[in-house]
Amino acid sequence: MTQHFNITPLSKRRRYLRSHLPKAEIILWMRLSNRQMLGYKFRRQYSVDKFVIDFYCPELKLAIEVDGDSHFTPLARVYDRGRQHHIESFGIRFHRVMNEDVYNNLDAVLDEIAKTIRQLETGAYRHPEPPDPPRLSKM
View 1 (cartoon, helix red, strand yellow):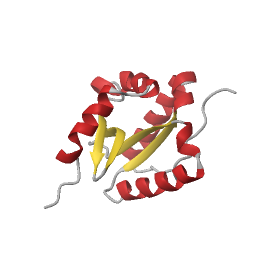
View 2: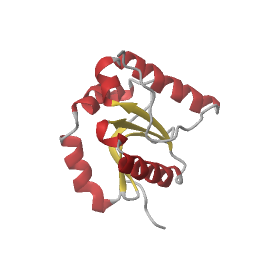
View 3: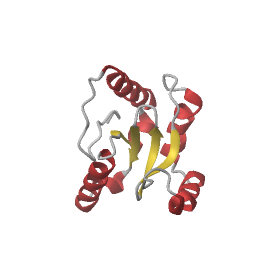
View 4: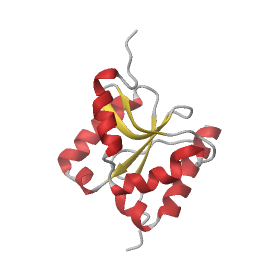
């Protein structure tokens, strides 16, 4: 049986990414770690096949991606769309947030994540198309 989750060849990369998290991911991790989000366990830098997800909840099969400006170029949009569809083929659902929203409106980001979790719990979840997460920041 082929292993697709946290495969050994990516362990050094995952370890490196965990020790070099961008500021927005550090801020969000401080609120997702230790089952602070509705009692669910999240993991940082979890790999699915050849891709590494920012945060992952195995119980919900929920990936949370924190997107910076580099994700919104035309080429990055194509790459992210293909990457997300491949990961979704393993039954994983996505929730995307923007760096700016984590910095400027963390409570709204956490509320949106909690809303996604409740939708998954009740079966009302609709998956978003990448990479256009909702803008929560006040302009």
